[in-house]
Image (cartoon, rainbow, N blue to C red):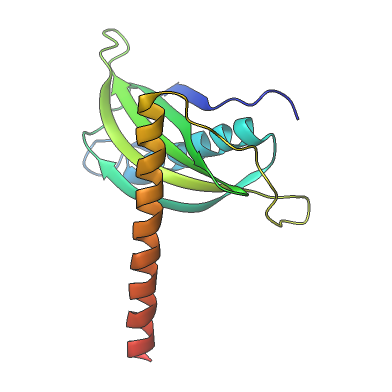
Length: 161
């Protein structure tokens, strides 16, 4: 495995085919871009093929318009044995002005897998700055919250049976 890379930014122009009926970029297109950036970040960090295990807390803050220059940045903020929590920020701007504005944010959990599709280990990410420590702590807090929500959902499903 080569040098790990913690952060990746994908850049492109929003195209007419990305538009919804309201004339803005479709949320599904944004979610696809998020998944691509999460994969690039996770693969760059781990040096392995990775799959999406979870995407949550997606916040659509502002619309993206056709012709906008879109930047989707993924950054590793926590690692488990085989998983990587990737913070994703989507920013957009008129390419003539390049005044980026946050349009979407979320967390994606990617899992590195071997040739048989089984989880495989990833390098540990250790926060070095105060900001990195806050990001890691936030990822751990969200992980614990997801566990509680999962338990509650399971209880709900059992009740419906």
